[in-house]
Amino acid sequence: MKLRRDVFQAIADPTRRTIISLVALQAMTPTAIAENFDYSRQTISKHIQILTECEILEQEQKGREIYYQLNPNGMKEIAEFIEPFRKLWDDRFNKLESVMKKYQSKK
Image (cartoon, rainbow, N blue to C red; front, side):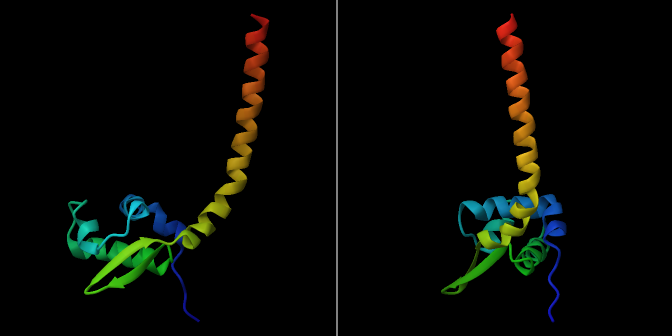
């Protein structure tokens, strides 16, 4: 059985979160990704490897180049974890909005 890295540890790193944001906009080569950082190409390659192992990024070979792109299914685990908290905060903000409207109407 192949063990997979923890997706939450992967996104805990700010460099990896930036890489996710970059490739969410368009597929990129490792060189293009590395150009956005002041790190060595090897360091960025290690970050890409971790994101790929977590299935957040997927790679596609186009000719001699490898392009990395966001794997929406890889983000599903994160979204499912966050969803109950989003609902909680939406409910709280809705209650606050209701209180504020009552408060404003009393003025």
